Image 1: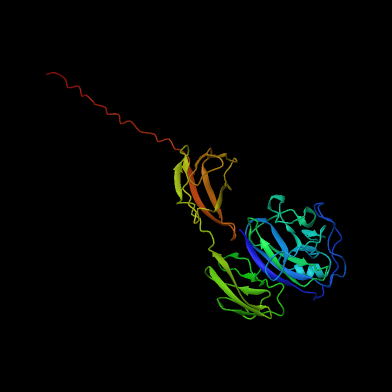
Image 2: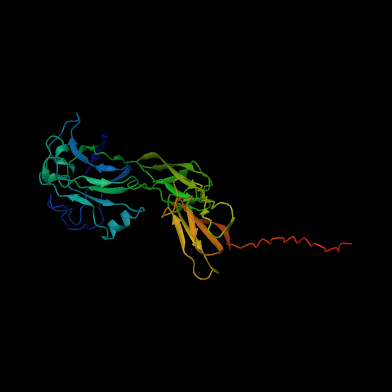
Length: 351
């Protein structure tokens, strides 16, 4: 998906950090130098997973390539909004960087098949596989001190945005989510939560606790000298599992046990277990099939009280268990009495 953004590069700004002197993937001359002073920071947020490919090309007022300018760059991951702190403290390694091999105002990250016209392999890095919700901080140098517009063009399979984009989160009903609005690159931003359901501080963008009782779409208005932005994201609320292990049973020894478990969510994972405390000697318990289905047949070799436990896990909430009790009674032999009928004959003398 191709997306183009226009950026104005000026000889302004001060980057107060020392970057790592590394060579990544062996295709360039290194990363930015210590004391870089004319840089532009860009936040790249990944909307859909795929390959991240992009180009930065200097253009004139007519939109044509200038073929001029050294646009060295370095890109860091921004995990949990901690990227800036790691950059300033020189503790965060970059994921990619390029010291242009040819200063022709044409650099970026792309496969050779996707190089734009005029591209040099010494000024491009290989594509990066990214996932939805990932975010990166791109620092673009202007080593040549040029004043010109630059086209930032995305053409990988990943969908991206350069506006503030906060990832969606999923929580269990009754839990809370901590939200940090990702507004990197904006100057002194202020925040106004337009949806305030369960929001602890509707004018903050940092460590805001949200506790919705239903899946909620939040919209935050962000205002800075760069403009006004709307950041939209979801807090998905998942109810806890409610498994049902089925009704209790009473059976005679030698009769197979048929369990009938059900889940509250077909997408949940589950396990069957059993408790045989108090049954001696230790019985054997055989599930058919094994591992068991939700409705397995169970064969035991001892009488006693068995408890079968169905555990459901939806991947978000804590796992929940339900127990069914099965009483297996011993077989008893019933003696059937035979009635003996005796006929008594009385002898009578003949007269």
